[in-house]
Image 1 (cartoon, rainbow, N blue to C red):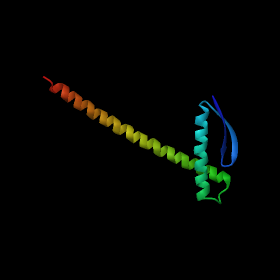
Image 2: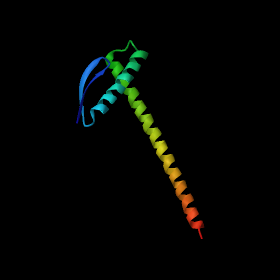
Image 3: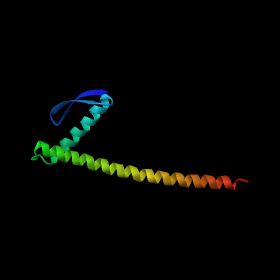
Length: 95
């Protein structure tokens, strides 16, 4: 179990998770960066609204990446199927 003291958008937190401390810090840095992006593009929003927009942006990114992963998995499986067919054809062609 990891414990890390982190700072996100100027607020300090002590986070505990079932992962390594370095991973917790990396996640917190990522969230802080995304929060800063929202603050830069929408500086007049309240902190709570920035947090919601940051959460939505991260969720959108996650869903898009999951879709990309699914597409790549489908492509890989298709290519594996093609390779298996080619190998089987070559095996059948051997006298």
